[in-house]
Structures are given as structure tokens and as C-alpha cells.
Length: 159
Image (cartoon, rainbow, N blue to C red):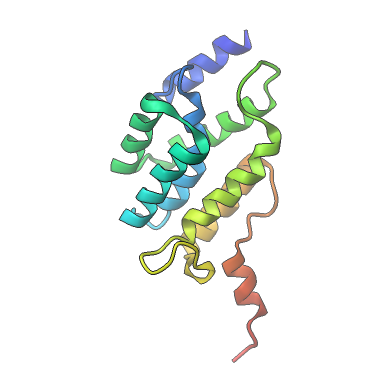
């Protein structure tokens, strides 16, 4: 029953049962596109993470490359985030775990910090990326989604 329901919702996203792990990259892609443009540095980092950390396979990579070529709309992102939570809490043997959800948010923030000048610049997170991180945190049910950039700005002395 659970498998049938998940197969239907994943199919709506263009994701199959054989490559559903690519959904773990969707929060990262959401942040990468948050300000309306995708930089080559972020795209490269996403592809590297897909191979090194997420092991998504060739079909998953095709889906990721589609996401990088054409920005999915907000409804798609929200549906995908919802499905990530469903998979994480599903009683079936999915390769998603609730304990991974905070890590997905951390990876998304790392993508937000990726710039042409640095791969990890905390002050480079834009307001749009901050909003995307907060939405991801809310949807995944993890911390408040406050980035290091925002924390650093709050610690700066007033002018």
C-alpha cells in the first residue's frame, strides 16, 4: 500500500522507484536556484555531491541535470520536500532516514555559501537563500533554518 502511494507521488515528480534517492538533492537544488539563477560553481558542487555523497546513479543524475538546466517551480519543490519527509518516516525499507533530514539542510546551506570566490563563504548567503533555507527547515521539520550568514550578521556590532 505504502509502496503504491509513493510510486504514484514520485511518478508525478518524474522520479521512479529505482532512482528516488535523487530527491535528497532537491533541497540543495532549491537553494541553488533561490535567487533565480544557478551559478556554474553551484551546479558543479551539486554534481560532485551527487556522485560522492548521495550515490544517485545514472538515472538520478539525468534527473538532477534536468533540475539544473531548468528551474523547477515552487510547487514542485514543495511537493518534493513533502515526499522526502514521507520517505523518511515511511515504515518500508526506503533508503531515507529521519536522522538524515538535518544533514540535507546543512548541505543546502553549503550550496548557498558556494560562490565563484569561495566554496564556503558564510557571508555570501542572500535573503532569497535565507528564505529558501527557512522553508526547507520548516518542511523537513528540522531546526529553524537560520544560516551561519544570518548568525554572523546578528553578531556584528551596530554601526
